[in-house]
Structure formats: structure tokens, C-alpha cells
Length: 359
Image (cartoon, rainbow, N blue to C red; front, side, top):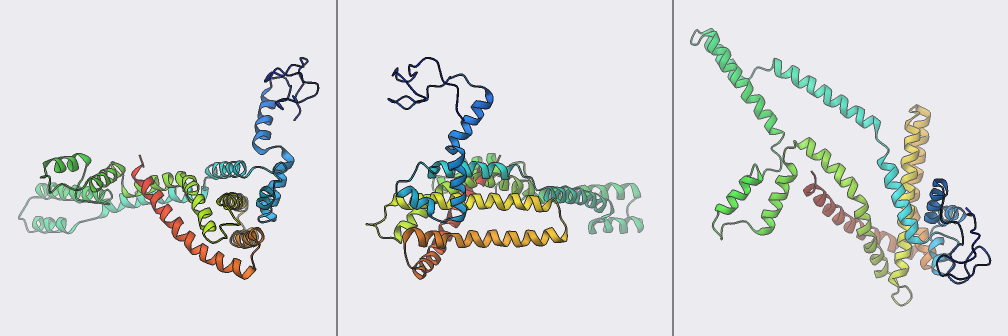
């Protein structure tokens, strides 16, 4: 989008005389600095995507021509496409943002329905339930050992005690022998120096007690999944340099620098995120119809996207590193299992971090 030029020919940035649109000394556009909201919005999008033509050209090549962006970038052709880091940040932001705005209505309705049904069933069950201890009291009442008033009072006490125990069972998870942080602290202080738990063990127990404080197992699980999903971008950010390092291990160190593998990794993960976004958007579209025909189409489309996501690495690796297909396949399979191991460790770490930081 072209902006209105200033009448003053003096560059605002370096005070150089500007004869045309751009300053020949510093390159700044000699345009009016005051802009409308529309101009500001368009300028932001253009700056983020480096102009519309290069944006769509980048996206097209990213999806349909594996490794072509990486080869073009490393060969020096960088003005025609989005820079790899900018591309990844943009796609990552859009993907996680849009997915976060896509509530699963079916699951939510099912969850609310299940909760209401469970509460109703529990309420009805509690009214009808007669515990074995109550039956003994009823027998004593029938035999004339105790009066009805005493019998009713004892039965009420038994019922309340049992129901309270059932509620407490929902909170008695991940029990290490301490019911609160205060109890843990008091025991730790009271112990002799040689009997105290290690600093790491004490910290771990304290974090778990704080995480589960005031929450049932179901509430803690729901909060954990929410926190874990928010931390997934962090997991990818940690994982990508390790993915590039694995590529570096399997390639000629004299021919390929770690930087080259890093660019390949940025483009590859940009594709995976973009494919995931397309996958979610199409599923949301198909779910809005929900009939036999669209369900079949949805299954086919989902299968094609998943297969293409799994396949994409092999032609990208083959074209970028110029290796024989059989070598690419063997290396790809070995790297797949190595990366699965690394990713599993990272996800376990992120899961632990998410749990101890739930509020």
C-alpha cells in the first residue's frame, strides 16, 4: 500500500534531500507520518508478511514444493519470500491463536450433560442408598433393642459419615502422606537433620500439594490439560534446535553448517503447523454439516492430510541434501525414532512443569 508523499523533500530520518519516494541515503520512505487506522492495520500486515505477493508465494511453495524455500533462501534469493523466522512466528501465532478460539461444542455439551446426569444420578443414589451399617441399626430397631428416634439418629450419622468419605475420596489423589503444605512444613521442621527429606524431595512434595490444593482429581486434570496446551508452543520452541542438531549429526559437517539445518527446520515446522491449522479448520467445517456423506469426505481429507504430513519430510530431505532416496529413507526412519525419544522427554518435562504450575 502506497502512502501519501510529504511535500517537504528533506528526509525525516537523516535530513538527506529526497527527490523520489525513497531516501537514497537511508532508504526510508518520505511519506506522511500520520496515518489512519486502516493504513496502520494494512501497514502492520504488510510488514509482518513482507507484502502480499511474497506471502502467498511463500505459502504456496511451502506446501507444494518441499525444501524449495530452504534452497532458495540459502542460495541468496531472499527478497521474494518471507524470512524463515518471520514465517514461523507468523504461522505459529495464527495457528495457536485460531485453534484456541475453536471450542469443541460437542465435547463441551457432552461434558455438561455428563456432569448434570452424574449429579442427578448421585443425588438419586444417595437418597436410595442404604449402607450395611444402617441395616444393622434397622434390625436392632425391629427387635426392640433401640427406639425409632435413636435408630433414625444413628442412621443419619452413618449416612453423613459415608457420604463425606465419598467426597474426600475425590480429593485423595497423589497422596504422599501429607494433607497440606502446613503439615509438610511442620513435619520437616520437627525432624532431626539426618531424618529430614532432601531439598529436592521437599520442593517436589510442596509443589504437588500446592497444585492439588482445593481441587478434586477431575478439577486438577482439567486445569492441567488447559495449562499443558498453553505450554505446547514452548515445547516446540525447545524442540526445534534439537531437531536441527539431529539433522547436523547425520550430515557432512564440512558441507553443511548448523545454520543450514536450522533454516530447514524452521520451514519444516512451519509446514507442520500450517497443515495442522488446515486440518483443524476443515474438521470444524465438516462438523457443522454432520451427515453420512460429509463424514466420509472428512475421513478421506483427514487421511490425506495426515499421510502428506508424514510423507513431507522425505522429499524435503531428499531434495535439500541431494542424497539417494534409499539413504533418505533409512536416515529418515532412524531420525524419526530419535526425535520421538527426544520429543517424549520434552513433553514429559512440559507436563511436569504444567502440573506444578497450575493455579
